[in-house]
Image 1 (cartoon, helix red, strand yellow):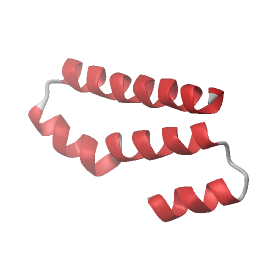
Image 2 (tube, rainbow, N blue to C red):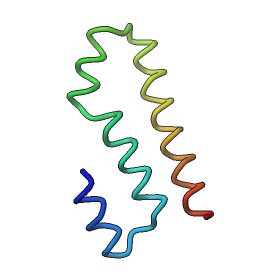
Image 3 (cartoon, rainbow, N blue to C red):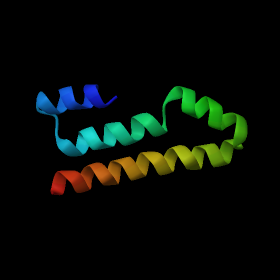
Length: 66
Protein backbone atom coordinates (compact mmCIF):
# COMPACT_ATOMS: atom_id res chain seq x y z
CA UNK A 1 0.00 0.00 0.00
CA UNK A 2 2.86 2.38 0.75
CA UNK A 3 4.35 2.28 -2.79
CA UNK A 4 0.92 3.04 -4.25
CA UNK A 5 0.43 5.94 -1.83
CA UNK A 6 3.93 7.26 -2.57
CA UNK A 7 3.23 7.13 -6.31
CA UNK A 8 -0.05 8.98 -5.88
CA UNK A 9 1.68 11.61 -3.76
CA UNK A 10 4.36 12.04 -6.43
CA UNK A 11 1.64 12.53 -9.04
CA UNK A 12 0.18 15.40 -7.04
CA UNK A 13 -2.36 13.88 -4.67
CA UNK A 14 -2.73 15.88 -1.46
CA UNK A 15 -0.92 14.56 1.61
CA UNK A 16 -4.13 14.44 3.62
CA UNK A 17 -5.85 12.29 1.01
CA UNK A 18 -2.87 9.94 0.93
CA UNK A 19 -2.92 9.60 4.72
CA UNK A 20 -6.66 8.95 4.73
CA UNK A 21 -6.19 6.31 2.03
CA UNK A 22 -3.47 4.56 4.02
CA UNK A 23 -5.48 4.55 7.24
CA UNK A 24 -8.85 3.57 5.79
CA UNK A 25 -7.38 1.12 3.30
CA UNK A 26 -5.76 -0.97 5.96
CA UNK A 27 -8.59 -0.69 8.48
CA UNK A 28 -11.54 -1.34 6.20
CA UNK A 29 -10.09 -3.78 3.70
CA UNK A 30 -12.38 -6.61 2.61
CA UNK A 31 -10.34 -9.40 4.26
CA UNK A 32 -10.15 -7.42 7.49
CA UNK A 33 -13.89 -6.76 7.56
CA UNK A 34 -14.68 -10.42 6.81
CA UNK A 35 -12.53 -11.62 9.71
CA UNK A 36 -13.88 -9.00 12.09
CA UNK A 37 -17.48 -9.75 11.06
CA UNK A 38 -17.04 -13.29 12.37
CA UNK A 39 -16.08 -11.89 15.78
CA UNK A 40 -18.26 -8.76 16.12
CA UNK A 41 -22.02 -8.45 16.03
CA UNK A 42 -23.39 -6.40 13.08
CA UNK A 43 -24.01 -3.30 15.20
CA UNK A 44 -20.47 -3.33 16.56
CA UNK A 45 -19.05 -3.99 13.08
CA UNK A 46 -20.90 -0.94 11.74
CA UNK A 47 -19.50 1.12 14.62
CA UNK A 48 -15.99 -0.11 13.82
CA UNK A 49 -16.29 0.80 10.13
CA UNK A 50 -17.75 4.23 10.91
CA UNK A 51 -15.02 4.92 13.47
CA UNK A 52 -12.23 3.99 11.06
CA UNK A 53 -13.82 6.09 8.30
CA UNK A 54 -14.26 9.15 10.52
CA UNK A 55 -10.76 8.84 12.00
CA UNK A 56 -9.19 8.59 8.55
CA UNK A 57 -11.24 11.53 7.26
CA UNK A 58 -10.39 13.79 10.20
CA UNK A 59 -6.71 12.86 9.95
CA UNK A 60 -6.76 13.63 6.24
CA UNK A 61 -8.31 17.05 6.83
CA UNK A 62 -5.75 17.82 9.57
CA UNK A 63 -2.84 16.83 7.33
CA UNK A 64 -4.19 19.10 4.60
CA UNK A 65 -4.27 22.01 7.03
CA UNK A 66 -0.60 21.55 7.94
